[in-house]
Image (tube, rainbow, N blue to C red):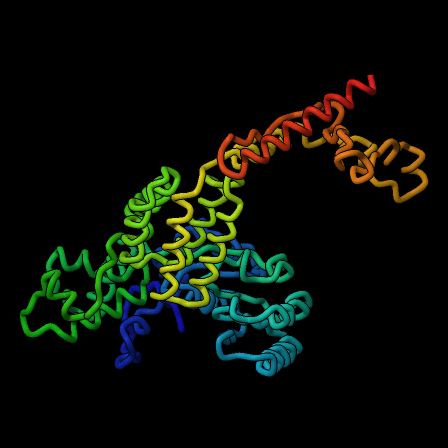
Length: 439
């Protein structure tokens, strides 16, 4: 399941292998498209130069070079390279791999263990890596196409640095095609437009662009040059409507978000359908719908977040195309819900205040006093238990004394927030009355 960037020359001994394997890099600086990692000043280049390579998580889409780079790192650091896939490996195989690594270490050689699809391991399996990472038995490099923050244990992430692999841009894919033409000693039989379509078909995947090129060479007759329409017929693959890494992607997601915010369900459905048709990752769309629910609807309709999150989970459960209807349903619900950005605005204001007054202690009356010294120092003194007060509301001040009361959240007279506003106004009235009584 190796990924690929491409190397500068084919190797005669590899004749018969797929083109992508024949062009696999032999040096780190052969790697295409990840210069932020492998370039002269890249993160990985710096690590190798320092002589210290710690455990890493490679996060990025397929065909961006995660496996290839891991192999090259083992060569650069003289480690023994071992590769397993979380799809096919269980606890028993992990134990064997760890034992072999311990034996190797006792003989003076460290093991670089590459784990493909590491996010597919469950929590207990991920935890099994921790001891052998900590004692230096292995240097772990895990590869994942999913967001590590959501899919990997915090304990594992705390012991590994996450490096992001980007989809290959058209310029990098073009360099791979040029290397392939050099290795094959013949031009790709495509006209200019068809060549551009081929790059779009690859969709940022280096292995895909070389596989497609190989299909074209196989299909072309003597002297035949394919046009764009003929190319799609030959490879039976449709070009994405837009490049997910470029302007088309951002333009459409912006149009979708603004249509939902503007309470236009028809326009929202149109842009959602266009993104489905373009091959957009539906779970990405699900995450964006969740974002819309909390940013643009908030507590005007608390069910919006529940429905958006449920739709994302429903797609994850049903898959495509059945799950797309769940996302469409959530999209319409969000577009037709009452709108409020009050929580969004309040949170931004609270963050700004936290940065400005981050060193202030909370008032002592709301702090616990677990020790006698803290109790003698006034911690917890004067605290009123709200449930003992009339209306379960004491009216105490909870802000740091030096800061004074602040208002961040200002709910509008719309949707469910109309009721929240009445509640806040009532509590504000009670707070004022009780403050005046104290005076």
